Image 1 (spheres, rainbow, N blue to C red):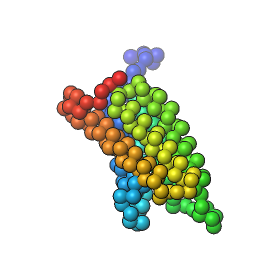
Image 2: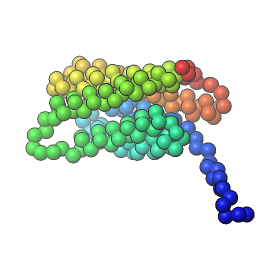
Image 3: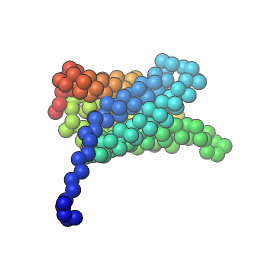
Image 4: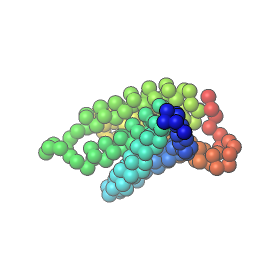
Length: 198
């Protein structure tokens, strides 16, 4: 064999990381949203959210994002890596207070509105995916808007925040359904759970 012979590397097929990313996002969002909606009122319950935010919503989504980059999926990579970073930043902000004044309601409101803007343009991109994925991003955009407004008005436990919590529950259910569809459909090798491609 000559030294100038071109070598081709065959890379192994990679499974669809969307199932992992959507599950990590959906479950973490579900647990937090039950608190935001005022359904669960235990002050110590935030520790459960933080555990999920670091490991499942955070690290698992970062891994899913890296897999999506490897698969050449710009949309999936950007979404999963960004929301993984969101959950890690959420954990950091809530567990590492800075200074002596704990009032950061305007900054948190701006933080959430910023994520609403990001999610809104991801919703535009989702128009080319599936109806269920589009629904996840549309619901999440509204969730961030209402939570952001609640914090900007310094009413993190008011009716606007609670409505944002219920929107978060809807978002989580849609994301978990989307994750289930990816796993179940791949396992059954048919559209057992419809996602309504666009």
